[in-house]
Image 1 (cartoon, rainbow, N blue to C red):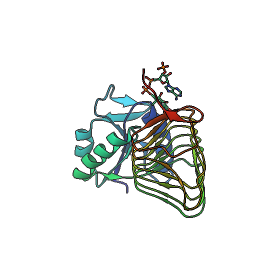
Image 2: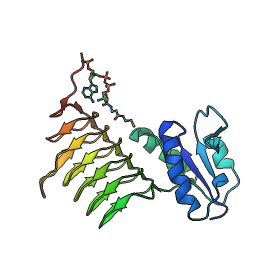
Image 3: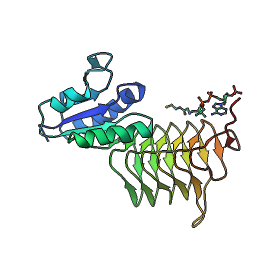
Image 4: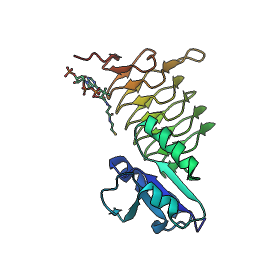
Amino acid sequence: MKNNIYGVYGASGFGREVMPVVRAQLQSSGVSADRIYFVDDNPESSSINGHKVLCFKEFVEEEAADRFVVLAIADGGIREKLAGKCSESGVKFFSAVANNVVLMDAVDIGDGAILSPFVTITSNVKIGCGFHANIYSYVAHDCVIGDYVTFAPSVCCNGNVVIEDHAYIGTGAILRQGRPGNPLVIGRGAVIGMGAVVTKNVPAGITVVGNPARPLQRG
Ligand SMILES: CC(C)(COP(=O)(O)OP(=O)(O)OC[C@H]1O[C@@H](n2cnc3c(N)ncnc32)[C@H](O)[C@@H]1OP(=O)(O)O)[C@@H](O)C(=O)NCCC(=O)NCCS
Protein backbone atom coordinates (compact mmCIF):
# COMPACT_ATOMS: atom_id res chain seq x y z
CA MET A 1 0.00 0.00 0.00
CA LYS A 2 2.79 2.39 1.00
CA ASN A 3 4.57 1.94 -2.30
CA ASN A 4 1.49 2.30 -4.48
CA ILE A 5 0.77 5.43 -6.48
CA TYR A 6 -2.62 6.80 -7.46
CA GLY A 7 -3.72 8.99 -10.35
CA VAL A 8 -6.73 11.10 -11.21
CA TYR A 9 -6.67 10.68 -14.99
CA GLY A 10 -7.83 13.99 -16.46
CA ALA A 11 -6.74 17.35 -15.04
CA SER A 12 -9.57 19.43 -16.45
CA GLY A 13 -12.39 20.98 -14.40
CA PHE A 14 -13.95 17.65 -13.43
CA GLY A 15 -10.59 16.10 -12.57
CA ARG A 16 -9.89 19.03 -10.26
CA GLU A 17 -13.25 18.39 -8.58
CA VAL A 18 -12.50 14.70 -8.17
CA MET A 19 -9.01 15.20 -6.70
CA PRO A 20 -10.15 16.43 -3.24
CA VAL A 21 -12.51 13.45 -3.00
CA VAL A 22 -9.67 11.07 -3.86
CA ARG A 23 -7.23 12.80 -1.51
CA ALA A 24 -9.62 12.60 1.46
CA GLN A 25 -10.44 8.98 0.71
CA LEU A 26 -6.82 7.84 0.31
CA GLN A 27 -5.42 9.89 3.18
CA SER A 28 -7.97 8.28 5.49
CA SER A 29 -6.37 4.94 4.63
CA GLY A 30 -2.85 6.23 5.18
CA VAL A 31 -1.75 7.25 1.67
CA SER A 32 0.29 10.43 1.62
CA ALA A 33 -0.76 13.21 -0.75
CA ASP A 34 2.56 13.08 -2.61
CA ARG A 35 1.63 9.57 -3.87
CA ILE A 36 -1.44 11.03 -5.61
CA TYR A 37 -0.96 12.55 -9.07
CA PHE A 38 -2.92 14.04 -11.88
CA VAL A 39 -2.39 12.07 -15.10
CA ASP A 40 -3.05 13.97 -18.29
CA ASP A 41 -2.28 13.36 -21.96
CA ASN A 42 -1.68 17.06 -22.60
CA PRO A 43 -0.47 18.50 -19.30
CA GLU A 44 -0.67 22.28 -19.25
CA SER A 45 1.41 22.67 -16.11
CA SER A 46 3.62 20.50 -13.94
CA SER A 47 1.53 20.92 -10.80
CA ILE A 48 -2.14 21.62 -10.08
CA ASN A 49 -3.62 22.33 -6.66
CA GLY A 50 -0.57 20.85 -4.96
CA HIS A 51 -0.39 17.62 -7.01
CA LYS A 52 2.21 16.80 -9.65
CA VAL A 53 0.85 16.34 -13.19
CA LEU A 54 2.34 13.42 -15.11
CA CYS A 55 1.71 12.22 -18.62
CA PHE A 56 0.65 8.58 -18.81
CA LYS A 57 4.14 7.35 -19.76
CA GLU A 58 5.67 9.12 -16.75
CA PHE A 59 2.98 7.67 -14.46
CA VAL A 60 3.72 4.16 -15.73
CA GLU A 61 7.47 4.68 -15.27
CA GLU A 62 7.16 6.21 -11.79
CA GLU A 63 8.68 3.97 -9.07
CA ALA A 64 5.78 2.06 -7.46
CA ALA A 65 4.63 -1.39 -6.39
CA ASP A 66 1.23 -0.90 -8.00
CA ARG A 67 -0.40 1.94 -9.92
CA PHE A 68 -4.09 2.83 -9.70
CA VAL A 69 -6.17 5.41 -11.56
CA VAL A 70 -9.66 6.76 -11.59
CA LEU A 71 -10.79 8.10 -14.98
CA ALA A 72 -12.12 11.63 -14.44
CA ILE A 73 -13.23 12.25 -18.02
CA ALA A 74 -16.89 12.87 -18.79
CA ASP A 75 -17.02 11.12 -22.16
CA GLY A 76 -17.78 7.44 -21.53
CA GLY A 77 -16.28 6.39 -24.88
CA ILE A 78 -12.97 8.03 -24.03
CA ARG A 79 -13.11 6.45 -20.56
CA GLU A 80 -13.46 3.00 -22.10
CA LYS A 81 -10.50 3.58 -24.45
CA LEU A 82 -8.33 4.88 -21.63
CA ALA A 83 -9.35 1.92 -19.48
CA GLY A 84 -8.05 -0.40 -22.21
CA LYS A 85 -4.77 1.52 -22.38
CA CYS A 86 -4.38 1.40 -18.59
CA SER A 87 -5.09 -2.33 -18.42
CA GLU A 88 -2.51 -3.03 -21.15
CA SER A 89 0.09 -1.20 -19.04
CA GLY A 90 -0.84 -3.01 -15.83
CA VAL A 91 -2.47 0.07 -14.30
CA LYS A 92 -5.39 -0.86 -12.04
CA PHE A 93 -8.56 1.03 -11.17
CA PHE A 94 -10.07 2.34 -7.99
CA SER A 95 -13.36 4.07 -7.29
CA ALA A 96 -13.57 7.60 -5.88
CA VAL A 97 -16.41 7.85 -3.37
CA ALA A 98 -17.04 11.09 -1.50
CA ASN A 99 -17.37 10.72 2.25
CA ASN A 100 -21.01 11.90 2.32
CA VAL A 101 -22.27 9.55 -0.42
CA VAL A 102 -25.27 7.50 0.71
CA LEU A 103 -25.46 3.88 -0.47
CA MET A 104 -28.49 1.96 0.79
CA ASP A 105 -29.20 -1.79 0.54
CA ALA A 106 -27.94 -4.17 -2.16
CA VAL A 107 -26.06 -1.63 -4.25
CA ASP A 108 -23.68 -3.31 -6.69
CA ILE A 109 -21.28 -0.94 -8.50
CA GLY A 110 -18.53 -1.99 -10.95
CA ASP A 111 -14.89 -0.89 -10.87
CA GLY A 112 -13.68 2.62 -11.46
CA ALA A 113 -16.73 4.61 -10.39
CA ILE A 114 -16.75 8.25 -9.35
CA LEU A 115 -19.45 9.13 -6.83
CA SER A 116 -19.17 12.87 -6.15
CA PRO A 117 -20.33 14.66 -3.00
CA PHE A 118 -24.04 14.42 -2.11
CA VAL A 119 -24.75 11.46 -4.39
CA THR A 120 -27.36 8.98 -3.15
CA ILE A 121 -27.96 5.48 -4.49
CA THR A 122 -30.89 3.81 -2.81
CA SER A 123 -31.75 0.11 -2.68
CA ASN A 124 -31.38 -2.82 -5.10
CA VAL A 125 -29.40 -0.99 -7.75
CA LYS A 126 -26.92 -2.57 -10.16
CA ILE A 127 -24.36 -0.43 -11.98
CA GLY A 128 -21.59 -1.43 -14.42
CA CYS A 129 -17.97 -0.27 -14.59
CA GLY A 130 -16.71 3.30 -15.09
CA PHE A 131 -19.87 4.99 -13.77
CA HIS A 132 -19.83 8.72 -12.97
CA ALA A 133 -22.41 10.33 -10.73
CA ASN A 134 -21.63 14.02 -10.41
CA ILE A 135 -22.65 16.15 -7.39
CA TYR A 136 -26.20 15.85 -6.02
CA SER A 137 -27.32 13.08 -8.41
CA TYR A 138 -29.40 10.17 -7.22
CA VAL A 139 -30.30 6.70 -8.45
CA ALA A 140 -33.44 5.22 -6.90
CA HIS A 141 -34.56 1.63 -6.27
CA ASP A 142 -34.33 -1.20 -8.80
CA CYS A 143 -32.39 0.69 -11.46
CA VAL A 144 -29.98 -1.17 -13.72
CA ILE A 145 -27.19 0.93 -15.23
CA GLY A 146 -24.66 -0.30 -17.80
CA ASP A 147 -20.96 0.42 -18.34
CA TYR A 148 -19.41 3.89 -18.74
CA VAL A 149 -22.64 5.74 -18.04
CA THR A 150 -22.26 9.41 -17.05
CA PHE A 151 -24.51 11.52 -14.83
CA ALA A 152 -23.85 15.29 -14.83
CA PRO A 153 -24.79 17.15 -11.60
CA SER A 154 -28.26 16.80 -10.05
CA VAL A 155 -29.59 13.98 -12.19
CA CYS A 156 -32.79 12.50 -10.77
CA CYS A 157 -32.98 8.88 -11.82
CA ASN A 158 -36.17 7.47 -10.35
CA GLY A 159 -36.97 3.81 -9.65
CA ASN A 160 -37.09 0.98 -12.20
CA VAL A 161 -35.05 2.75 -14.88
CA VAL A 162 -32.63 0.87 -17.16
CA ILE A 163 -29.76 2.88 -18.62
CA GLU A 164 -27.66 1.14 -21.24
CA ASP A 165 -23.89 1.48 -21.77
CA HIS A 166 -22.36 4.87 -22.60
CA ALA A 167 -25.52 6.92 -22.08
CA TYR A 168 -24.94 10.53 -20.92
CA ILE A 169 -27.50 12.24 -18.67
CA GLY A 170 -27.19 16.05 -18.54
CA THR A 171 -27.43 18.37 -15.56
CA GLY A 172 -30.75 18.39 -13.75
CA ALA A 173 -32.42 15.82 -16.01
CA ILE A 174 -35.33 13.92 -14.48
CA LEU A 175 -36.03 10.34 -15.52
CA ARG A 176 -39.57 9.16 -14.82
CA GLN A 177 -39.88 5.98 -12.83
CA GLY A 178 -40.59 2.73 -14.68
CA ARG A 179 -42.54 -0.21 -13.34
CA PRO A 180 -41.35 -3.59 -12.13
CA GLY A 181 -41.06 -5.69 -15.29
CA ASN A 182 -41.60 -2.61 -17.49
CA PRO A 183 -38.72 -0.23 -16.84
CA LEU A 184 -38.15 3.12 -18.50
CA VAL A 185 -35.19 2.44 -20.84
CA ILE A 186 -32.49 4.90 -21.90
CA GLY A 187 -30.77 3.26 -24.89
CA ARG A 188 -27.08 2.71 -25.44
CA GLY A 189 -25.19 5.96 -26.09
CA ALA A 190 -28.29 8.14 -25.79
CA VAL A 191 -27.79 11.73 -24.59
CA ILE A 192 -30.30 13.38 -22.29
CA GLY A 193 -29.97 17.20 -22.45
CA MET A 194 -29.65 19.29 -19.32
CA GLY A 195 -33.01 19.97 -17.75
CA ALA A 196 -34.89 17.32 -19.75
CA VAL A 197 -37.88 15.56 -18.25
CA VAL A 198 -37.86 12.06 -19.70
CA THR A 199 -41.28 10.42 -19.68
CA LYS A 200 -40.78 7.69 -22.31
CA ASN A 201 -38.09 5.26 -23.45
CA VAL A 202 -35.22 6.89 -25.36
CA PRO A 203 -33.81 4.87 -28.28
CA ALA A 204 -30.08 4.15 -28.53
CA GLY A 205 -27.90 6.96 -29.87
CA ILE A 206 -30.60 9.64 -29.75
CA THR A 207 -30.30 13.08 -28.08
CA VAL A 208 -33.43 14.33 -26.33
CA VAL A 209 -34.17 17.70 -24.71
CA GLY A 210 -37.05 19.56 -23.10
CA ASN A 211 -40.13 18.83 -21.01
CA PRO A 212 -41.44 16.39 -22.02
CA ALA A 213 -38.19 15.26 -23.64
CA ARG A 214 -38.25 15.04 -27.44
CA PRO A 215 -35.49 14.28 -29.96
CA LEU A 216 -33.26 17.30 -30.57
CA GLN A 217 -34.07 18.82 -33.94
CA ARG A 218 -31.05 20.35 -35.61
CA GLY A 219 -31.57 23.39 -37.82
C1 LIG B 1 -28.41 18.52 -25.47
C2 LIG B 1 -26.97 18.85 -25.79
C3 LIG B 1 -26.11 17.58 -25.69
C4 LIG B 1 -26.92 19.43 -27.18
O1 LIG B 1 -25.64 19.85 -27.47
P1 LIG B 1 -25.29 20.24 -29.01
O2 LIG B 1 -25.51 19.05 -29.87
O3 LIG B 1 -23.93 20.87 -28.98
O4 LIG B 1 -26.44 21.26 -29.39
P2 LIG B 1 -26.39 22.86 -29.59
O5 LIG B 1 -25.77 23.53 -28.42
O6 LIG B 1 -25.83 23.10 -30.96
O7 LIG B 1 -27.94 23.20 -29.58
C5 LIG B 1 -28.80 22.82 -30.60
C6 LIG B 1 -30.18 23.45 -30.29
O8 LIG B 1 -30.73 22.79 -29.14
C7 LIG B 1 -30.98 23.74 -28.09
N1 LIG B 1 -30.60 23.07 -26.85
C8 LIG B 1 -29.36 22.62 -26.50
N2 LIG B 1 -29.40 22.02 -25.33
C9 LIG B 1 -30.68 22.08 -24.90
C10 LIG B 1 -31.32 21.63 -23.72
N3 LIG B 1 -30.66 20.96 -22.79
N4 LIG B 1 -32.64 21.85 -23.61
C11 LIG B 1 -33.33 22.50 -24.58
N5 LIG B 1 -32.76 22.96 -25.73
C12 LIG B 1 -31.45 22.74 -25.87
C13 LIG B 1 -30.08 24.92 -28.40
O9 LIG B 1 -30.59 26.11 -27.84
C14 LIG B 1 -30.12 24.92 -29.90
O10 LIG B 1 -31.33 25.49 -30.32
P3 LIG B 1 -31.45 26.37 -31.67
O11 LIG B 1 -31.12 25.39 -32.79
O12 LIG B 1 -32.88 26.81 -31.65
O13 LIG B 1 -30.45 27.46 -31.53
C15 LIG B 1 -26.36 19.87 -24.75
O14 LIG B 1 -26.86 21.20 -24.96
C16 LIG B 1 -26.60 19.49 -23.32
O15 LIG B 1 -27.67 19.69 -22.73
N6 LIG B 1 -25.52 18.92 -22.73
C17 LIG B 1 -25.46 18.60 -21.34
C18 LIG B 1 -24.63 19.66 -20.62
C19 LIG B 1 -24.34 19.30 -19.20
O16 LIG B 1 -25.18 18.83 -18.47
N7 LIG B 1 -23.09 19.50 -18.81
C20 LIG B 1 -22.65 19.12 -17.48
C21 LIG B 1 -21.24 19.52 -17.29
S1 LIG B 1 -20.63 18.88 -15.76
